[in-house]
Length: 116
Image 1 (cartoon, rainbow, N blue to C red):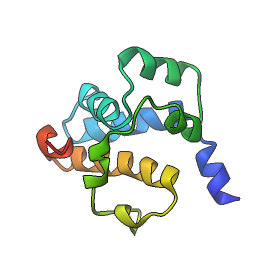
Image 2 (image 1 turned 45 degrees about the vertical axis):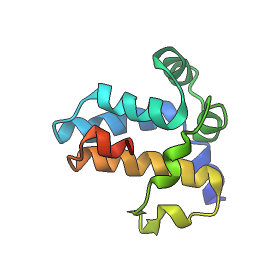
Image 3 (image 1 turned 90 degrees about the vertical axis):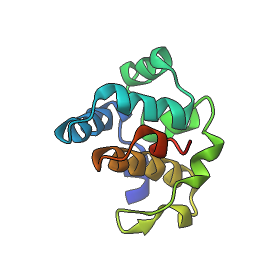
């Protein structure tokens, strides 16, 4: 039941939290967007459509144009779990985004965050 509630959360409610977290650490909304574009394949217009449509997390990731193939290079812990060991694909994708935003807030360079 808890899993379904989590996936049902509107992305439009989580997105501002990502921005706030980044801005508290001196980073920008544009950097958050760049991370989202890189991970999901959305562009400025399609991301805004998803936000305006108030799609839930599950729909946001299921409709993503293309999850970046380098996402599998994202390693480490998030919420007490090793992101690379999360078996549920959708949950792993959500945690990838969480991990990238954490890296941004911790001051990593965009080059390292985007696994270039």
